[in-house]
Length: 384
Image (tube, rainbow, N blue to C red; front, side, top):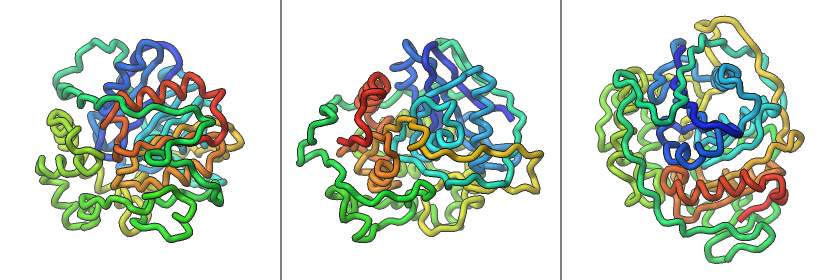
């Protein structure tokens, strides 16, 4: 299959993975910010953006991992830092567990999942990969394959600054995690329920259980509505969904809405979303995520994933950034991930939503740059 990849710059490599309904364009401000000192690789994952649907309709975790490894090998990259949002964060964390030797750091924006301790024995399909990548950041995309880039949303002023990791955060804006029982690393943080039990929240910071609810996700739980949206997707629906994922809807730019709308309407992308949902385990109220299993009846032969590695054993540094106003994946999931991963750092943005890296790129870029510069000296399991 052909995969739309942008490959720019030189230096330590950063891989950027987008979330559900998004594309590599969500990382445009990030490419501009990092390309002077890094090699920046961005991918339109199958079913999204220019890449379009997977030829076999396979959106399994194994297929996704094999795709990322194929890209890494084709581009001749030995090691990279993997940065992902939402679904892309889940992929980033899974990749770090499966390929720790190729993972320098992990950065999660409102997303992530931990794999079971032992790998599944079912094989991963081997797609025919024809990676298209652009190395000249000034080159223009071919007009028949890539829509014109919409201007990135203007970032809000950088009003949040990181404190010294050893100092306590201000009690009215930041919260330090109280000690809580750590979930087993073989368990996936529960991002699927809309409320938490008292046990789940008793050691969490204030407002963790006061979560915003997504009307769009609740609507997408209806099979009939999903089918209708696969052939008819009004632009106002896209705008409503984006306003939900922003902590401050006033930050949403018209060009961003247009970009999401046009790329979602690329042939096959809406049906790919339905196919992805159908492959998922049946859970009520789920945030769309990559399924665990593929349909072996439509797949060619069979490489197998390596054993997942405990991130605490591999000591891959992990930065977790979460918008407290996320209506898609509640902030308590970020706290659980932080508790489960020893070598992790947690930053909570009090005024941002599900896509902090898009809603306020300037602020998030500053935090990620600082993490990458001093990752070796960051105290284990610190938070702010």
